[in-house]
Length: 69
Image (cartoon, rainbow, N blue to C red; front, side, top):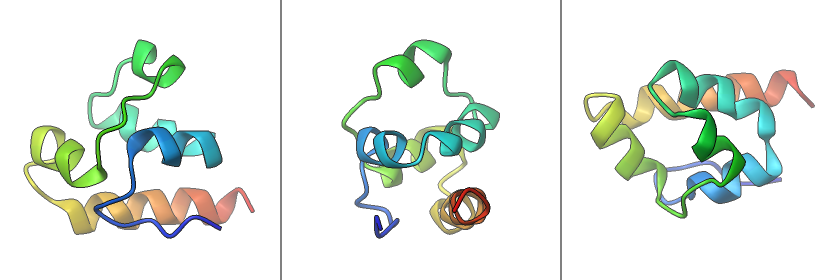
């Protein structure tokens, strides 16, 4: 199980939990990033795409990844 927090990279997240792409896409991630996920931490993604709301982003991701288990 992947511990999902601000230091988790987008690449690790999508490798282990492909369903998380839907959350990231809802915040502006493009399909090409799905196919070749960047090695940036979620805190960076949240700062650029979620108005810095890292906690909200992580909650959404955890919700989606738990549904898939």
